Image 1 (cartoon, rainbow, N blue to C red):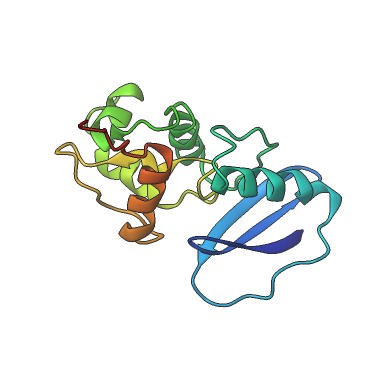
Image 2: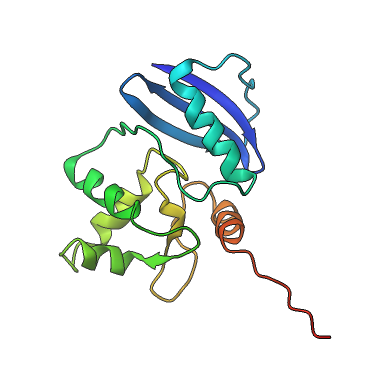
Length: 157
């Protein structure tokens, strides 16, 4: 398993993966050594994450290999269906999976998402529109949602 570290506007991103795909992407504020040599099978992930932060990429196209239970993978696959710039509630995800009472299990799986921003768990909000439950910190969730859907200032005159 290879890993690299990139610097982004939100902190340091650690990408892990091998020939089977990207298995983990995490964010931290702790200073990490920025990678200068990038293994071939991690180059595409590094490039796509940089493009996302530059505003040039709205969708990731990577070979993914996250580790998790079948239920977690089912939730993560549902998260992949949330369009760029849109949000859905935990209840909506739960309903889409066909079990409206599984909201805690869905929220738990969402929180264990191993592929930060690629599987867009930041696009899941509370039923009342509140920014709840984000392992990377609510300030990062707010930043990501604003990055994906910036408010356009209207000219009054």
